[in-house]
Image (cartoon, rainbow, N blue to C red; front, side, top):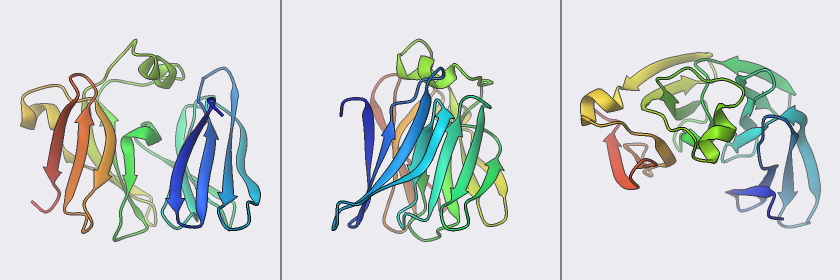
Length: 184
């Protein structure tokens, strides 16, 4: 159990992902909270890191073997590569639009060891905020955090307000709490 990361996706689904490491294959399972049925969603992906959307239909994931961030449509089994690459841990799905995901993207270049080194505290990043439109396979920068805040911000635990008006997160560097007005 301690080698699994859980995500409460919705009242019917819990996602379990093996802890990511660039040298080991990872797996994602969904557990139906009503029946207890376990379904394998993704598997045998080196250093797998995931974030499921609230309807349990789409998964944002990082494949550290190929070092690509992708979206996986569970029903069609289709995979779409997204750029720029970041960690799903730095992302949050929109509550208003199922095709949007907001992510903190490091300014530094990333490689197959980046997520493991970030988890273990060997490195930190200075992030910008991007929005990805999954439906149209586009992305755009929304906020240059270091320029606008005057400090380096390594985003963790992002959440959105109920109306998607504010992105709230913690700076991993000093554990300070931040919010970003997405309506401006």
